[in-house]
Length: 364
Image (cartoon, rainbow, N blue to C red; front, side, top):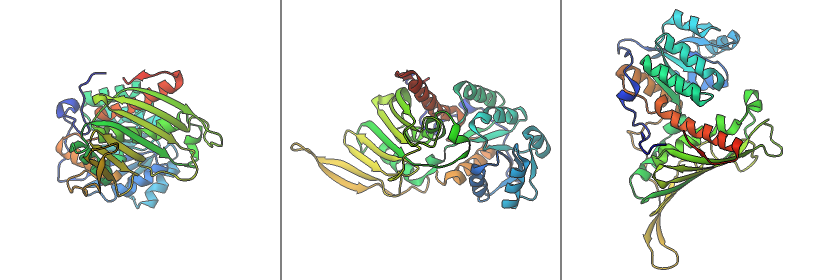
């Protein structure tokens, strides 16, 4: 792992390449593939985005595609089971990939082969080899390629990020994040291996990169399935990441913890040499800054963080889709471009490797 890195959003045109820009005199046209549960969130968000038209809906079960078509009044959108054929028929600019992780690789390659960009669900891919190949093909064909890391587009994490970057905490030393949610999804997650690490932890791992401005170096992770779990594999995990800049990030998580649940954004403590920030994922992150040290314990000034900045990238799914539309028109990269987001994915697979091997693993 080298010390050179791109902090969140610092993705250059040279890194991405320039894709064919969509002119301002027509809508950006999108085809959504994977009409399961998450697709409704995407379509609700897409309906609020100016200058965007959903022209196709694809699912292995065409009845699911037709159901979404009826639910969202997309009477002009084509439905089908074959992504390549729907793309050829509709000539979109963008694919919304809402498929299961194992299908992201082929979905992206199918889109890139037809000169179409991809905005995909997390995780970027089901393994690092697929992620690297997707990025390589996307770059060589000069296509837009980004991931819906919707937790980044939360106004309160932006407040925390900005406060940490302001230097008021002094030198950043530690981030701790707890995620405890007993989620009864049903479906593919019930039998998925490494269900917490692969399906959910990437949100918190990516948030740690955003807040700290640092990238992963190594990880030690312990994973287990607790008594009473309704998942087949790995509903609990604890991980310790060494990050660049000498920062340590710890993660404790569970998909099967009933009662006293955290927010979906996790419960955070961010520690620096001059104080700490505590954030429960809600609207009131607070700071405790050293005012004076004269004895055993320091005196502190405690306050809520400054309010959201109008320039912040916010809006969850809607904000990310808006950024994709803007990127397709301007040629500028998205903050969650795959070439940067792969660093968050690498944290996931390094944690899985550590959990399987029982040893500390370097993050590749």
